[in-house]
Length: 96
Image (cartoon, rainbow, N blue to C red):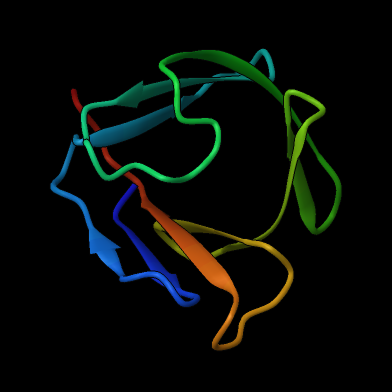
């Protein structure tokens, strides 16, 4: 994760590798959290299942987020991009 912006809480910018989501071909995501300021659910390290529709990602059948894709970023949000909405921005990171 690169940053969290918007909403009434302060914005957070993370160092490369501080919060990693590894998206696997078997519809799982491995979350590795190395930050004390990680407020985005799911917050615990581990594997989570995911599914998606044309505009929603569902994590563990519990967390629902709208999404946008750019060339190298995945942006998850709560459906409201406004002063009270949050954006969670993930930037593609290759550790090879």
